[in-house]
Length: 191
Image (cartoon, rainbow, N blue to C red; front, side, top):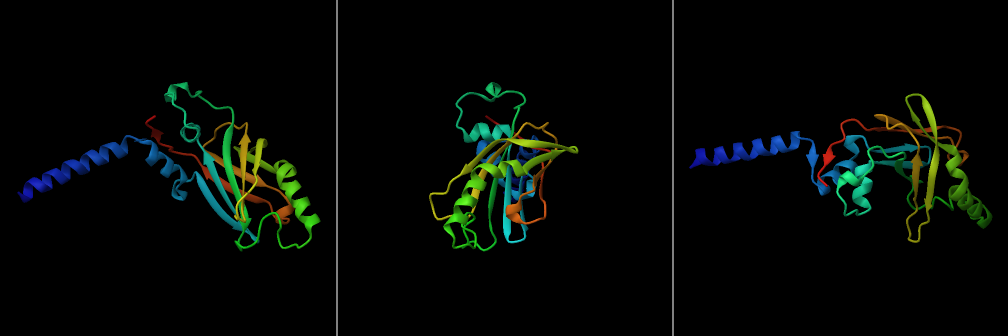
């Protein structure tokens, strides 16, 4: 009886190993994998008073998030745009990104305008030594009490295995901010 249990455990382990080595995941596993910081598609750094959180959105992940009912074959082979979500906030989560530490409403309006329109001009994506400008930019206005803000970014880049988001913005001080995303060994997903 004990040998039979060991045999079943061995077979179950072997099947699990074979499935995991095949590189294919179901939708829920894939979504969890993409968001996991340990796999390189999601990065988090702190610079000065700010926290930057960058999430790369592989085409298959975007396909899942958009709720397409069509099979994966309907997805274009190479998307011309690489998508990212950048979340920016203060280390002190009680400070709103737009208001900052100022009590002046004019400063709030200037910061809101900057982050809504001009910030995209201070963002680029570096791949293999080339810089690509931000060609798709969306500032998500927060209607809740979150102090951080999300920016949806798109770049007409080459889909290299390593990308570096470069932020050279006066809003965050004089230091250039660089966030690295590694896109090696992205598993396939069963769609």
